[in-house]
Structures are given as structure tokens and as C-alpha cells.
Length: 564
Ligand code: GLC
Ligand code: CA
Image (cartoon, rainbow, N blue to C red; front, side, top):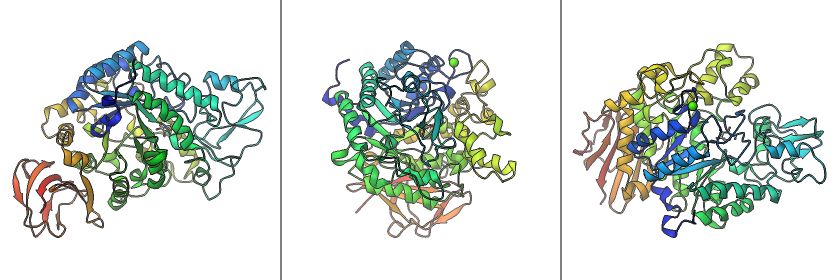
């Protein structure tokens, strides 16, 4: 395919609404119990009906699934569980016909230990071209891996240790080797020349390690060693090489940046070192924990607001935010930041809170119907490598019940259960035996039921997407937060010229009277969106009360006001 012309270049991402597909649990098209690209093909109209304009696929490549696709054994193919390249092209073409872009997951910090490069590299030998594709040492340093024990594993074939920042079956590539970077460029070209529109780039801020791999310090070797590979010494040089390839195709690049601060993110997003169009920050995912699964703490709205505003202010008109509340690495947000008891109310309030920030919203499969965390009764039922290892790594002296509770509220598996399509057996996900447990709440929480209900979370997401789409104020207006110290209400303004939209969201299950910040009382405002539509009718013009706005549990509204 020819290089895309200027007009088609990557600015589309700013007005896009992304949907994230973790294919294994999305829709099973051939009845073997595993979600696949046949299932995806049949659901593309559903995505279209949501107003989605771009899809991010988690890894679809052949993989032994030690980390469900993030351990790749062939970068230029499709896992047989999900289909084949022909089926992928059908999905890609149909998505394009329906007006949706498609981006792939690029995982280049590591491969699978079953990748042919690693199999060759293990053999060592001076004239072996793959010898330095990975990071080998005679002696390990003290780093811990993020998923599984120490970061080094001894290989008896080669007689050396290899580095794995994640699971043992995910050896880190040696990005300092120019041949490895050429391989990456070939992978980019392979997918871009097929017509793919860009990449979400996995742990991209980890790919350049500090020379000498010094020991980490601090009470937790994971955290204490991270600065030796996070935003490493050559990161921007390497990314510039990859950017040049993406530039040829006008491809969008979105970097996943675990633990990236907003200041270091700016280096990826702007100026001479710009290599990414957006970054996924983890800042706002820490409103209830320091690092998912390790140190859980109660949700704090103020922490959430602090993180969101930090990125909104810093990026402002210099860079572009990615907006998300859920993905395949985090538990379901209603179960974390909302309330399962006020399911519909908190699900819609959370949607309101993030969909109108400045940036591009991402919706993770099932988020749009308010799926919640699954509760499994034994650690043996969990399949995620990090959950299984965290269970035996942290808080091991706690009673089993407490340890399981921790996994339930924090495991990645909690958000990887099959998509709930309808109330039929297995939630309509498969006609076979589902590969993983279906959340028993599927009879109440499912797409079909929510399609029928005008006030469902699903239909509310549609309204959010519709309101945001083509709205210059909500797309490009300035952001300002109000009343930061209020622990129950998140209020912000989006403003362009004299027009302002105010987003007001309650984060409590108690009814409250919210004293509006100075200057609001007495002014008239038009209700643009409300999750209590009988109480506040969209389209209505109302006077903002001077004595306080009465907010129902998790009430959220968007109002439009003229500024003087
Ligand atoms: C990223 C992915 C996660 C994966 C890890 C290692 O954080 O989102 O799912 O386990 O990288 O590849
Ligand atoms: Ca299947």
C-alpha cells in the first residue's frame, strides 16, 4: 500500500474515540471457547453503533501465552486461536469501511523465550548473529522482576543469565544492538504496509537500560531498580528511529509509560524528542493503590483529581492526552472508583468524569456496560502470571481470605472475564466452553439488556461520545479544575472563547448539597447531559442555585454556560 498522503496523516487521533479489544475474551466466532477475529468481525457494527472511530487490539500474535500475548513468538503473524492473517485483513478492511482505524500492540521490550531469536541466542557462539539480541550476563544484579521473582534467569544451554523485567518467559531484547532495532523497523513496516494505522507501544519507556546495569537500591528492589531502565539513556534516540518509519506512513504512536512522570512524558510527546502522539500514564490509576496489587489503599477522589489535573495542565496545548479508566491491566473501575451498589449511577458518573477531559478517550471492552470485578474462590482459579506471583510474594503471612480479597480487588484477571453480550448461557460469549470464568452477574449486566434500556450505562456512553464528537469546546477547549479540595465532587470546565462546559460529578453514594464555586450561583446554564435525566432534563435551561446544588448519589451532569 502506498504511503498515506498528508491529509490522511495522524491528526485523526485527536478527535477519535478508541475501543480496546482484548480479543481472547471479546467474542468467540467458532465455538472453541476462545475469543477470536471471527467474533470481532461480527461485532464491528456494534462498535460503530457506539460511535467508536478506532480500535486498539491487544497482541494478536502467536504466543505461548505466559502473559497472554505479551510474550510473542512471531511478530508477523496471527495466533491460530484468533484466526490467521487473512481473517485479520478482513477485520481491518471492514473496520476501515465502517470508518474505524486500527492500531496494533507493539511489544518490543521483550519477546517470548520461544521466539526463534531467543532459541538461537541461547546457543551463544561468536559468529552467531543472534548472540547479542538479548541481555546476557555471567552474574545477575539485584533487580527484581515485575512479575515473577528475580529479574535474571540462568540458562543452562548458554551458561549465562538473561534479563527478564517481566515473567521468566519474557526475555528482554537488547535494544542497544542495531540489528534488533532493524528487526523492530521491519515489524513496523510489515503491519503498516498492510494498512494498519498505528501502534500502542508496550512498556516503551523501559527499552533502553542504563549501561552496566547497576544494582537497585531501596526497600523494594522493583521500585529501587526501575530508574535504571525507565526513560533510559538512549530511549529518545531509538524512538526517533522508529518514529521515522511511522512518519513514512503517517502512523499514530501511543506509548505505554508505566511510572512515567508527566515531566518525562513531555519528552516523548513534544519538542525535538517527540516520538509519541500520546502516552498512557499510570498516575490516575493510583488513586487507590501505589502499584496495583501491592499496596492497596482506599480510593481517594482527591488523588484522582490531582493526577488528572496534573496531566491536563501540563500537556495543555503542548501535547495530547490519552484518557482511560480501564484496560486489560487494571481491575474494573466501578469496583474500584465507583460503587457496585450504585452500579448505573457510578458507571455513568465515571464516564462523565473522564470522557470530557482534553484528550482521546479509550473504552475497554465491557466498560461501556459497566462490567465489574469477578470474585473467584481460590488462587488456583486465577491465570494471570502477575496475580499468581503477587499472591506468593506479598503479604504472605495474612490469612488466605485477606490475600484472596486483595487479588480479587486488584488482579488483572478481574477485568479479563468474557464480554457479557446477553443473558443466554455463557453470556453469549461462546457456544462452547469459555476459556475463563464468566462473571455470574451477566444476567443483569449485558449488552442486550442495556440496549433495551434508554438509561443504561451503554446508552449513556453513546450520549457522551455523541456530545463530544465535533464539539470544538469539548475537543479543544482549555481545562480548568474547580474546588480541588472537595473530597466528593469533581468539577471542571472546558472553555473556548466565551463558551464553557462544566462537568460536575459526585463520587459519593450519599445525597449531598454542593456549594458551587463563587460566581456560578444565579447564572443560567443549559443541561447538556445528565445521568439523572428525569431530574435534570437534557436541553433544559436552569438557573444555577445560589444555596447549593442538590446532587443525588453519583450524580453527574454537563452544563453549558456563556462566560462574560
Ligand atoms: C504492559 C502490558 C501488560 C504486559 C506487560 C509486559 O504493561 O499492558 O499487559 O503484561 O506490559 O508486556
Ligand atoms: Ca474461537
